[in-house]
Length: 256
Image (tube, rainbow, N blue to C red; front, top):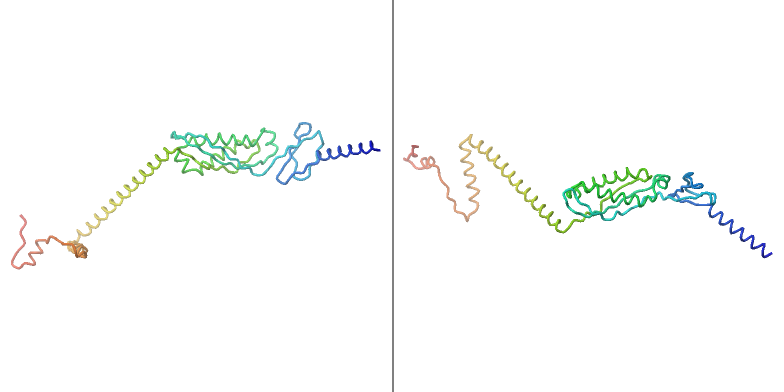
């Protein structure tokens, strides 16, 4: 009887092991790539999957979005400036069959491709473009990586450049360049203001020249503005013709 029970226990254990190897449960975001005697026979899931023990094998594939931190890369820009750049890439598997059959490790392959693409793309741009046109660079890198990972069944959703680290001496040089640029703009604005003021003065002079009495009124208006400050002493010339009119019996000197 003891021998009979041991046989039943062995059979029960074998049956449990057989069922555990034959029954698989895949979550909603998982797919199973099934191989029968080493040959690809289909993609199954999600839910309950029944496999033929020993004959069939299954490889799970996660369809959720992966976030890959691209390590800091040494990049030499087109204007020969050495910088360190790191980024983050968001991608997911859209074809489980190609992700398993066409590449050994799609995670490592995507990471290495992102590193090389980051160096090659940024090396074609100057430092100012790296700092000012980051959105365009992100789009260019994402497009290149996505086109090359398409054969692996990978969809690259987004690429973001995180940091552009610059040497301390280069930071000082950029600060001096920015200061010089601000001075240049200030001088240009000042010169444009002087030019506009000169044009307005010419127009005002032309209008005043049409009526001599208008010049006298403008002259008295300027004196009135100066007289507002009581601490000032005002000395102004009086035309000879006005003095002749104010002094009886005297005529203004004739012009030679």
